[in-house]
Amino acid sequence: MDTECLRLFVLAAEKSNISAAGKVLGLAPSIASARLAKLERALGADLLHRSTRKVSLSQEGAEFLPYAKEILAQEEAARAALGFGKPDATGTLRFTAPSTFAQLYIVPLLPEFLERFPGIRLDLRLSDTKYDLIEGSFDLALRNAPIEDTSLKGRKLADDTRILCASSDYLAKAGVPETPTDLEHHQLIGFGTRNTKRLIGPDNAEGIFDTRGSNTRLMMNNGLSQKLATVTGAGISANSLWSVHQELKSGSLVRVLPGYIVDDPTVLWLLYPKSNVLTAKVRVFIDFLLEKIAGSPA
Image 1 (tube, rainbow, N blue to C red):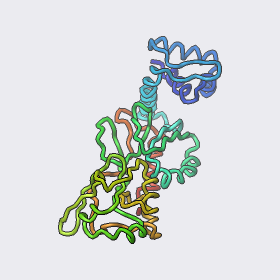
Image 2 (image 1 turned 90 degrees about the horizontal axis):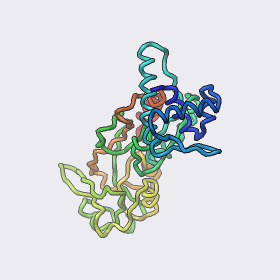
Image 3 (image 1 turned 60 degrees about the horizontal axis):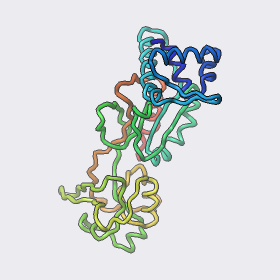
Image 4 (image 1 turned 90 degrees about the vertical axis):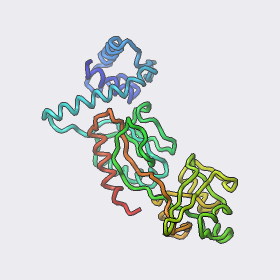
């Protein structure tokens, strides 16, 4: 399979424009169109929907795109292994991360990264909804969860310590819980589907933070919104320490049951498809995030 045709297809998909993709590779528009048509004939599928103004991926093209990227990455890695220079960190990097973490720790770093690596273009999807890496053609994802998908590989970015907290106003009105059993008499804030957390206290005492009961009148699926609801006095919630450490420092949030540890296997992972070669653009972004974030006390 002609890798130059694959490179043209990937560029056309990214730019939604065949002429612009051909220009990057030094091809006239007519030649670029002919080469893409040749690739489609070889594959027996229409990869792109064409109009007079732009192109878009067909369903077959969307399914084929991650494989085309992988073939190009394999070619790059093979050339590097044979000594044909060091691969440049260039191209579009598709990255997805939880919105709250990204807003606090990743977005402020982006100007420095883009300045350091001028050949990379970032395409970010920041949401607490988990995207499928392979179906979404993502190069990399940040996940704050145990790795369960065996088709993924990862690097640990940091621990994800969870704590219970509430506002001082809420505790002044509702009282301060002394034991996990006291939580049954408090308003709890639930997050997503993570309804029950095991608590481990002094002398191996145990309890639970359970948001499935009637005292949970507020469920959230966004970490920042959950934190804001907690700050304004809606109840007690379980939060990542990296999310609330500034509020704890300022006093707008108070740790609840500080003698108890939330038993949670969650870790912050940087994940990428196992089948993918770790390209230069992905490797430098992983190294950059490890450099800037991994050593943070929070």
